Length: 248
Image 1 (cartoon, one colour):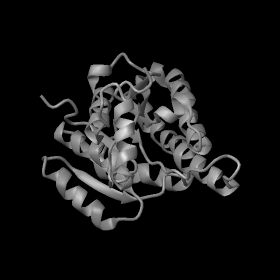
Image 2: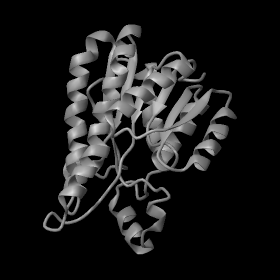
Image 3: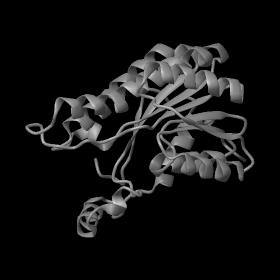
């Protein structure tokens, strides 16, 4: 049985890493997938083909979720192309790490804009259609850093912690319309980005995790499948830590 059959999902920032992992696993579970990407048209076309190979409809949109009007336009296009939208995954995010003494105002603002404002933009764009159909699952990608903080990441931690408060508030506002809103806080997830890190550093991180390994994009995607599907029909306003026990 496919858990997301006949549902349509919009996933932001899905051309690589965690977002791509979510898109692929959603397609395997029967979801039609609309996804956004920033720059790589070629990677987006390849992902479209891969998703379609699972017998679902898929389309990539070059869109900047941090721009309010672009987000509204994106949702209009997705609804026109797919007919309905049951799932939103706010996954787009960036880092511009530095110690607070050295961080520039520009780098602080940019991270808040891309990581937090984009969640507001997209959520605001989907709530009317979701309210009309009286069904929706919104999943916001936070981070363990948003839960516990991290030196050298004040901007990132603030943006990801902000997502947690936003998620709880949306859950309270929209619960009566059968729209659920939850957050996922991934820990150390091994992607193309972490592959560039020093191997010794990565090994030290793995050792410090109770499950003794980094997570995979599929680990996060599986949590998203649960929160997007009817299996979690009575769960809203929650933060699910997908971190191998890091915050235990």
